[in-house]
Length: 176
Length: 109
Image (cartoon, rainbow over all chains, first blue to last red; front, side, top):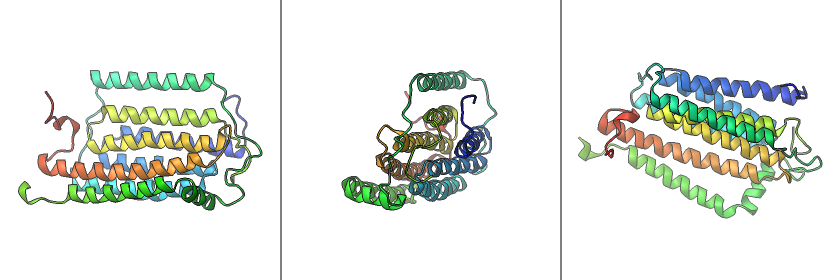
């Protein structure tokens, strides 16, 4: 916190990252499952704010539409359709929990040490990622000029996934 | 703001945010008992990766749009993943009347 320049984007970033981390911690520490799903919506919105802060407006809008809109609602539906009164048991110091916590803290410390030990690029001052266009236009051009085949493949994947989801979730006669 | 020039946010801060978010998600995925919350924790980890992709799209040595396009593909694949995952969850719940990880031990030996 000491060597930071207190510019408006930096302050906005600190506020947003605080929101993301608080929501993430709440999402895994609430006991009622439905509250967890609500807190995860806050994480998704915070990530969208980070993308917009980084100049990726289209990715931010897609994040709000797909994650904060569709996926959060889908999770809510799944909770309502299954055991919507489900509660996590109070945090217990079982061997598995301690091992997972130690492993995650070790991973976090290692990642942080690596991040601190390297010098990272700060972006070229004169470079414009959007080549003079607005961000959605530039992303669209990149998608349809350089990434046409992956784009079509991903649409195929979406169709297969959605049809598969419908078939998996529908009632079957032999289950009764 | 906008696409031009350097950003006042250092890359270390963004990477540290993504690393913490990833670890929180990993802890949730490893310890939670409800299958829905495990799926949600995996989404947290995917979001952490997306933050890195967008950050390096802007702050890399040669800034370009590839990171943002990759983030879009990741978001799409994550949407497909959560749709299939929740459908599987509903099918399991209908068969076994439970959504807890510890009850899904049919293949345990």
